[in-house]
Image 1: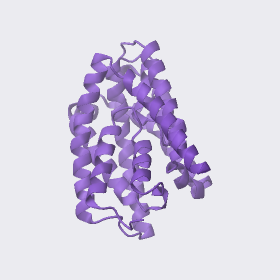
Image 2 (image 1 turned 120 degrees about the vertical axis):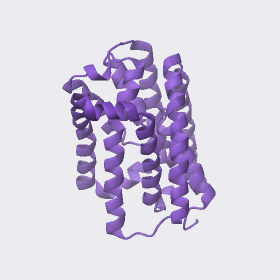
Image 3 (image 1 turned 60 degrees about the vertical axis):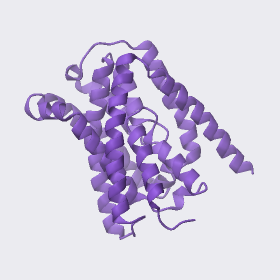
Length: 272
């Protein structure tokens, strides 16, 4: 097993992160699966925290650029929405703190489990298909109540599990609460800003505290961040077109099919 990531491996993971962070198919789940394929099913043994941080920061940059006008309005005109976003972030922060305090030894293996990813991917797919079939609202994210924002925040917190799509669960919840497709997507990614930024800061401090060696060279890490940023911009634009055209159903079926394939793959490894 390699001791560090090569450039091509970093770039593959950066492309996967950039695409799957925004399309409702679970970025963390896909990273777990791709790492398992790249390293013979042993990705959980690799020190990948630094690479995870820079790839997520790259996609955070994509959100900041793509939604820059809406973010500016939050700071100037829509301060109530900014408060709702803070409220919606609380469940994810609380869940991570509880898991770190009570399940610290199990927390990282759970997040790196390919089998759990396979089990959760169909859940993401079914939730997306159900919400698209049953929801046809027209309300905007500015009209959300505090309780509704908290519900979407709980959905985001549950997506800490690999295979549960953060964007998929939050967009689906927004649709079920009567939001328009565009509004649900916009609020989902506005809500992602403090979550991604907070996770990056927390993981960065953890990395510095532990003094762990880098998983690859600094130049490769910067390259990964740039690629995830550029690909993320394209993925956000693609998602916007898919939402407007009502063509997200195939992503739901994709999650279900991929989940079943992963479950079969992991079952075969268990009994091999």
